[in-house]
Length: 277
Image 1 (cartoon, rainbow, N blue to C red):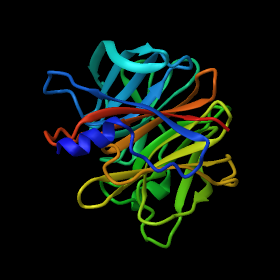
Image 2 (image 1 turned 120 degrees about the horizontal axis):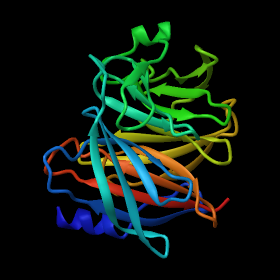
Image 3 (image 1 turned 180 degrees about the vertical axis):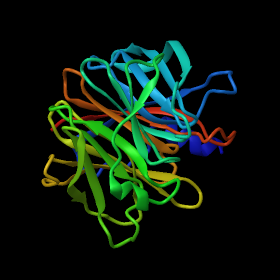
Image 4 (image 1 turned 90 degrees about the vertical axis):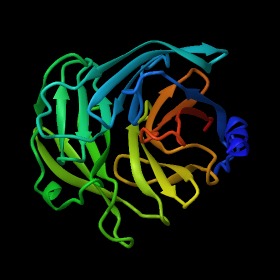
């Protein structure tokens, strides 16, 4: 597998747009059996800190060590089990409001919970009737928060290869299906974020037998103005599942994290690209 990691190290990718540029890929290793399975990430507005979600219902927080903007290490990291989740397991998406309130989506029991912080108990938010029909282990994989505080979630699978992905919005205490994301090929939705520009960024994944390939698409909040920003070759990166979009002062930056599924042959990788448009 050494040659694969060599390709990863140099960022062997095929951007679908010339204005998306790879910055670096950081392999994060922690000697702790509880570490791994990172399925979502939220980066602070200045890019210095992050809150991630493990799919074993735990928060992982830390501070990026950067050199000229490039991640070279992670310090002050901490793990915290989610409190009060009951029978909701398999946490997959995260969104953080400006006041620090944390929202987490689950696919073991299809729903979204609210936390005051990583140490607090949680509250189950209202459920949408559409959640009942979602597939096990393929439901609320992504979560994002809009400028008005509305939450947006998208299931990993739409149910049919010819059916678009429904986007559900929780606003003023009730859910609606605000628009659809068209399916393009075999990719499935695994992460989302709403950037400082007010656009929705979708992280997608496809498993091709020997490894993963990733794609990032961008839409406005009506589901229009679709643009593919990035599409990688197989095995360029590991199993990227979480995405956060922030302004680094030069352009918008995509910070993505991989879920290693707690497997020896996979790894926790933090990958960054810059969007220069």
